[in-house]
Image (cartoon, rainbow, N blue to C red; front, side):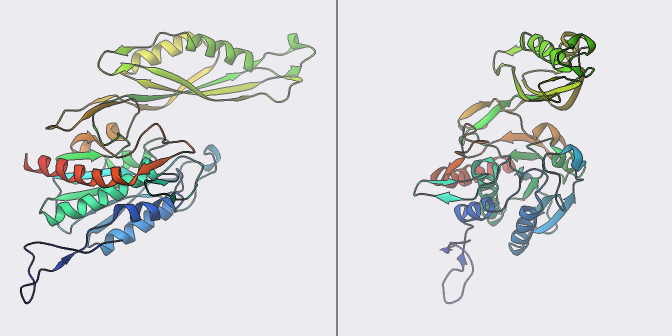
Length: 365
């Protein structure tokens, strides 16, 4: 896990300095990726990280996070579920490095070639965990008061971040990790999850006049929702809408009595107007509920760090108690959530340096 180097200025005997062995983020990424941690199943990777950080002399705390109703969760929940917070004993951190332990499905383990690591979570976000752990190791050696916060549930509902926000540790700054190609994000879009549920009355399909099709209602409502104009923010771009799930009906020869659709809107401003417009457009043809609402976020530039606009949402809106937020991480969001997920070994190592530089600058401010 570590590779030895010599720490200049460290005390030693016979004029020799003591060996300092930095954490190897590439090896740590391999180990993390090979532990399945799809949302609601984060317990094993959390336990691994808790043990690892404890051996690195951190004081490690588990924050319990409730499992959702397994009947409402694809695949159900499995076992204990918790966030991890780690810092040196008795230290109140100036800066906390944070990201999430859960991944999207399906799980596939780590493979590699000379340039890349491949596998679920390599860039979103287990490679980021490894880079942050390696950076924190260097930062504490340099005397920076640093903490680590790894949460569950980011890919579904930010449940872990919401729990963590009830237990801040006095940090002034939060550096959140997501794939930003090692660029500092100066804004992120929000996320509004919309659920439409239509109800009808079953009948034999040869006699549709005796029934009421829930699918017809849903399809018509979705057509009108897709035609809605969405807000545009000049510096961030347009809001976007994706219909991600549709289900319903009983059989081809049965008029459907139920149907539902799940949508995700990437927002670029306050969500209230979008919510009101969806409710108006659906016009009673389906029940409308909003199961997730993460606000868009603006952040500031720092020094000469290259910048970008993140079109995705993060846990940052749910971690407001942890200090002024920044967003930075290795890897490309374009391969996250895909069968081709990967991370460049060089980019992973470079990001350790970037985390060290950014946290050091912030801690001095």
